[in-house]
Image 1 (cartoon, one colour):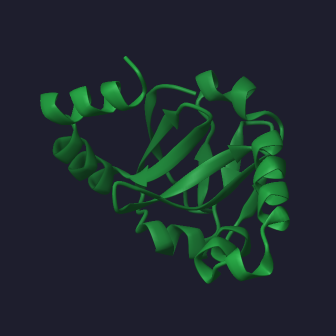
Image 2 (cartoon, helix red, strand yellow):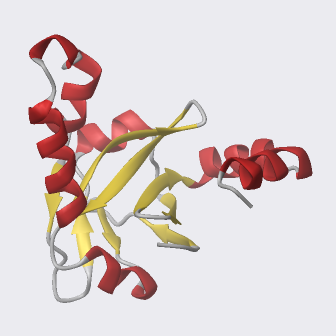
Length: 142
């Protein structure tokens, strides 16, 4: 998944699925708490990625199942977009990420993220530097 898509949360806490992400997300996907560079956002997983995440969690020894890891599942919301390609975000998820009316949805390789627009602008300003981009490119082998 790639791209950056501005969106607006409606009065019923619904977001519109960007057309370029519809096929990649599929008919059912999962939204839960996330973090990127120390900033709160929401992470969106496809159904198959969510299943893998659950299997990986269940395969951990109980001693390695942390409270924070459990919160990923506790806060999760299964989403099935309606005929207008809208899906609902729960209030606890919105509160966690500090999401207001203006939202940015971004593709991040195998997942997507949902950000409050102001928080994403700060994240972008902090990280869109030649030095940080070069370090990121080197980290992924380019």
